Amino acid sequence: MEIMSEPARKIEPKTIRERLEANERVTLSPYAQLSERTKGRKVPEPQCDLRPVFQHDRDKIIHSKAFRRLAGKTQVFLAPAGDHYRTRMTHTLEVAQFARSVTSFLGLNEMLTEAIVMGHDLGHTPFGHAGEKVLAHLMPNGFHHVKQSIRVVEQLERDGVGLNLTEEVRDGILKHSKGKGQIFSDNPNLTAMTLEGQIVRIADIAAYVNHDFDDARRAGLVKDAEMPDVVVKELGQTHGERLDTLVRALVEESRFDEKRMIRMADGPLQALYALRDFLYEKVYETKSVRAEFDKAQRILEELYKHFLTHGDEFRATHWPAGTRPEEGLERAVADFLCGMTDRFAIRTYEQLRVPRPFAVV
Ligand code: MG
Image (cartoon, rainbow, N blue to C red; front, side, top):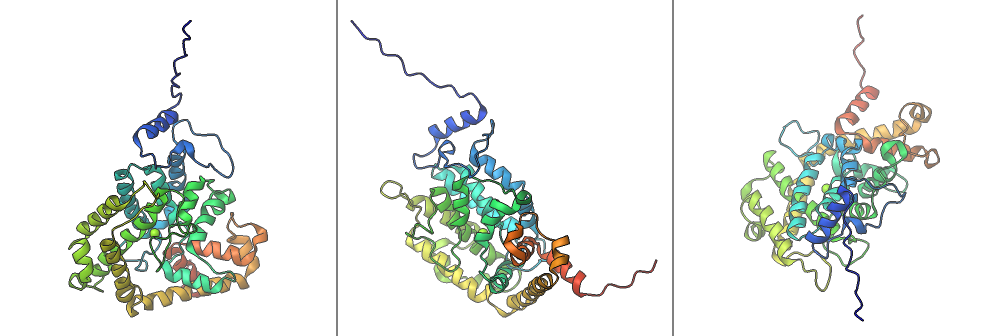
């Protein structure tokens, strides 16, 4: 007797989200982080019927107040008067553009990449790294923008509820920063758990060294002719050529078979380091840029000390809704300060320190 085996039943997607998740299974690389395989959120919440999880996370971040404030925060040049200088917001968008290009060329999950990028700099202080430095000096346990970005998404946003993002997005935000350190690392503490997160780490530096050079040129601090030879030779003559080379260098060198690692050929990688070193020397640490940073640091330092010595007033008027009372006044002041835009910090300082003309009624 012939035994009829039951034909494999095809599960029809019921919702738009399920259809999009099914598309990911068919169209993305086997090494992509699929939305349906997420490790999930700290607090389980019902899935959206339209959006896969990482798309949902991207939307949560874009609708956050911390995200909108990126428009008013320094990238390199303080509260720039020129309309064409980058802010943290335009930096974030340029990182997204670079990272999404690489992600799509490698067949990985663009929505995850975009969510990580949108959140990666949410914890930056006003006045860029100058602000970060002064808080690191003042806070008893130090301060780092990456930890603050995580604090923003986990706790400070939505008046203390947090955004409840997926583990993959939080991990990508946490592992994006390298400062003056190595871009690629075998240290698992520095390497994102997803390839999408690894892409963001390199997209961040690829974007900023290129756009900071462009802004420094606009400010008259450097000239095109000063670009280090190795950068021109390896990456190209123009801003566009250099970004194109970097995207290709990542797409061509990343190998997923033996090791799941995003990689870049050595020539372009060394050029990237050379451009970063050049910017530290000629831009980030030069006198004219530092002079403004010193003023900015004084503003933050004075505000910090003022609020600490006027604790009752601070508790009544400025205590951030997301800072828990048991975390203490210093933590609350730091949360308040690093949420500020450049202009808000300057205005608050003026209100406290600069006498206002007597109003005539
Ligand atoms: Mg960044």
